[in-house]
Amino acid sequence: MRAVRVVGYHTNMEMQDVDRPELQGPLDVIVRVGAAGVCRTDLHILEGQWQEKSGVDLPYTIGHENAGWVEEVGDAVTNVQPGDKVILHPLITCGLCRACRLGDDVHCANNQFPGINTDGGYAEYLRTSARSCVKLAENLEPADVAALADAGLTAQHASAKAARQLRPGEYCVIIGAGGLGHIGIQCLKAMSAATLIVVDRNRAALDLAEEVGADHTVLADGSQVDRVLELTGGAGAEAVIDYVGEGGATAEGVAMLHNGGNYYVVGYGENIDVPTIDIVSTEINFIGNLVGSYTDLQDLMALAAQGKVKLHTQQYKLDEFQQAIDDLDAGNVRGRAILIP
Image 1 (cartoon, rainbow, N blue to C red):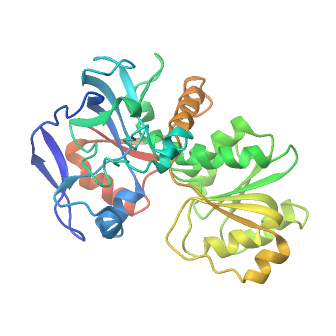
Image 2 (cartoon, one colour):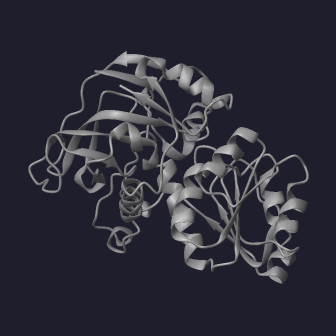
C-alpha cells in the first residue's frame, strides 16, 4: 500500500510502498482510511519536537486524525464489523489500567498513539483497536469528520471543561479561530450560554468565527487586551481558551482573565511566565488539555450528527501531502486540511 513516511527530521516526507498492516491481536481492527487530518502537530513532528518524547524509529507513517471504513476485525471484536463507517479515537488503549478504568483513557498507562509513536493514517490502511472505533451516523462521512478525531476532540475536551464552570452571562475568550478554534467555538456554543469573544490576527478567521457562533470578534492588532476588557466591563473573562500558545498569546490571555478565572491551555510553543504572587493574589488557574476521552469523541460525533459542529476543510489527494503540509505551515488553510487516500 502507499504511505507517507517520515524519513528524517527537518526534511520532507516521502511516499513509499509498504506492507499493509495485519491483525496482531483479537481486538485489533484494520481500517481503510477515508480521510486523514493534517495537524500542526505533524509540523512539530517534522521539526523534531516529538523525537525524544515519542521514541519512534524512522521511517514511519504519521497521521493521527483518521476516519474510514472497517476492513477486517480480530476474533474478539463485537462493536464494529467490516463495512462500518468509523472515526478513530487517536489512542489505542488497554482498558485495564487505572486511568482506563476511571474513564480517563487519554492517560492510559499502556497506550499507543498512531501517527506519533506508531504508524498512522497518512496511508491507505491503518491498524487500530476496537476500543478506538466510534461508529458514524448515517448522515456523516469519513471526510466530513476525520480532523475531529484529534483537533475536534481536543477542542471539545477543553470546551466541555470550560462549559462545566461557565454560567449564563459570563464571558469566555477564545484565542485563535483556526483549525481547532473554529471547532471549539461551535462546541462551546452548543454546551454553554456564556458570551463568546474570539480573538485572532487573521480577519478571514474572524469572519469564520462569526459564521460559527462567536458573539464578538476582536482583531489581534495590538489593542486586543484593551478591547476584551472593554467588552467585559473592565473585569476580564471568566475563562480563556488559548488555541495558539505562542507568539505572546499567553501573556495577552492572562491579561484578559478575570480574578478566579480559568486559563485553558491547548496550543503550545512558548512558556507561561506569570509571577507566583499574581497567581496567588488573583486565584487564577492554568489547565492543560491533551486530546480527550473516548466518550468525549462520542459526544462530539453526536453534536456533528445534529449539525451543531461542522468542520471546515480543504481537501488534498494523498499524493498532494507536501502541498497540504506547506499550506498549513504558511497559514493558507481555512479550517482543517485533510488528505484523501
